[in-house]
Every structure is written in structure tokens, then in C-alpha cells.
Image (cartoon, rainbow, N blue to C red; front, side, top):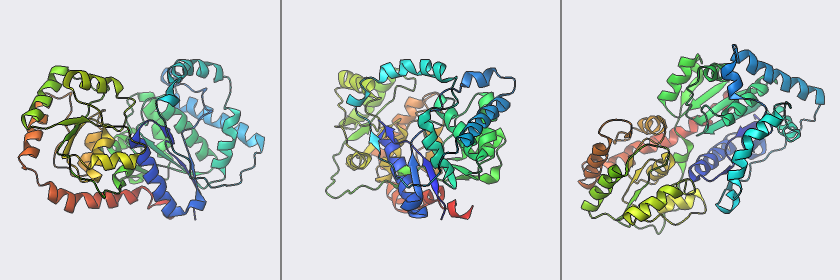
Length: 407
């Protein structure tokens, strides 16, 4: 049986990240056995590497390769013991109290990178790299971070280091949104040398192929959060509509006025629901002051959150995982794209009958109004969708892990 080092988010404020991580861990435990699985969070200790350096380099791939080669050379010289010890990881759902100093930490991170650019890696990273070296596979579940940022850069560097240590590598459960040309070349190098890639939709697959990644390596499977299945015993429909918007999309409040008024024409009481309550605090406060719409009470974990979602008649949401966990609970959603294409590609994969609405496209408010009227008039056969369609996509989630023992 393969020994697997799985990288996924283990510390987050986001209930959606918790859902996809916990469900993915369960899948891997079932496939390779708990005793053969080590779950780690995002790599810390690889700070001295810069996106700006890649962008300004005449040969970003050569520069990136030099970084990886230097780390491997130093690690091998340490002759560190590489005995495998399983660990499934403790998920830390971060609360407001634990983020007390997060603003200060955010300010200090660029300074930290400047200081640590003179070091190949932290001492703390040696133990992690030793664990990777004891495994057969390093597998990366990127979720929302696979884009032009330092976290993704560090992760790609770690994956390339593992490849140079003769480890098999893979990526699962992600959408990749990379725009910078230098970054695309590095993605082609790292993902092109992977043994298997599983993405959340056709748009990401097409993007990777356009970078130069071999199409035969790239499969499609749903986000693992669609497997979320809470105990719905005792849940009764409350007749309400859940709603959220995020600070990441551009909208005017007069547009939200139109949506709220339409829902109130249908005599609907609304509740602000979100899988990222801390990140949405400014929007939550605006909904409270402008519309007297209050946020759903805080949840201790993703299963409790989904159970509360199950009570709503439907949801209007820009939050990807609020949409996904609602559908998993057989609750209709009016999906609004929260960032680039992630929601659209995932819900298209689900064959969802309402097209994902994008606020950057003309007439988006009218499309939401039409969708509300369609749901209220029972013009969409959601009973058929939830009984006959969504189930097969929940089964397809297994494609994220089914390949592991075949490579």
C-alpha cells in the first residue's frame, strides 16, 4: 500500500475549507489506510522565494529549478532520518479570538520574506521534508489557494523538491487560476512532472493543458465538500431564504436593493449565511444596518453549518462552499460567481439547472430576479435533480483518490 503525504488546509476560518479537507482525508483513509497516511498543512519554512523574482527573471524556470536543487542538495547533506509515522492531522477552525494579531502578522510577512531570503529553508522545515522523503507520494489539495500568490509558489517548490527526491506527486480537488506568464511556466514544469492531476472542472483542465501539461494526466472530479452529509434528523424547513455576498466581487448596493425587494415581494424572510463568517463581517454588518437582515448564528464545524443550511427553502450565494454544501443537503441555490470561474466550472460539472451568474456580466441582477421567480413558481424540477442527478456526482468524488494505488 502506498504511503501518502497529503497537503490540505488544516488551519482556516472557512467552514468550506474544513469540509473539503475533512472529506478528502476520509477518502484517503479509506483508500490507503489510516496507517499509511500523513496529513500536513501548507508548507511553512520556505519563505525566501519570491514571485517578483520569477516575474523579473529572463528564465523563470531555470531560477525555480535552482531553488529546488539547492534545497535538495542541502537536505541530502544533512542525512536526516526518514522513518514514516502516520498522522491524520488536527483540524483547527480558527475563531475571532485566535486572529487577534493576524493584522500584525500580515504586515510582518513581507519583512519575514526579506530576512529569510538568505536561508534555503527553516530548521522547522527539515522534519517536514524528512516525512515527505519517507513517503511514496506527495499529494496537494489546493482548494482556493492555487493562484498567483506566495502560498502556491511555496507549495509548487515543495512539490518540485519532492519530484527531485524521486517521490511521486499529484494534485487533487482544486481549481487553478494562474494569470502571470512566468508563473504559468513554473506550473507547467511542476504539474507536467506530476503522476496524476484531478481538478474541479473543465475550465481548469483546459487552462493546464494550454500551459503545456499533458492532457492525459488531468482528470476531473467534484470538490470533496459535495460529500458532506450531516445528520438531518429533526431538521424542519423554516420557510426562509439564505443570502450572502462577499467583499471580493464588485456590486452596488442599489443592485442588492433590487434583489432584497424581489425576495420580500415573495414574502420571504432572509438570513445571512456564509461558510466564511469572519471574512464577511463587513458585509454582514451592512446587511444588518441596511435591510435588518441578521447573520445565522456561528457554527462549530462544517457539519453543523450544513445542518442549518438544510432548513432553508433556498439560498442566494456568492460563496462557493455555501452553494456546494447546500446542494449536498438537497437545498436549491441561486449561484453567483465569487471569483473568476470556480463556481461556474464546478456547478456546470454538477449539471446544475441554474446557470452561475457573474456580476461582471450585463444584466446579472435581472438574472437573479428571474431565478428567484423560477424557484418561487416551481418552474425547475429540483426533485428530479436531487433524486436523479446530484447523486452520481457525489459518487464521482471518489475519482480524487481512486487512482492512487494504480500508479
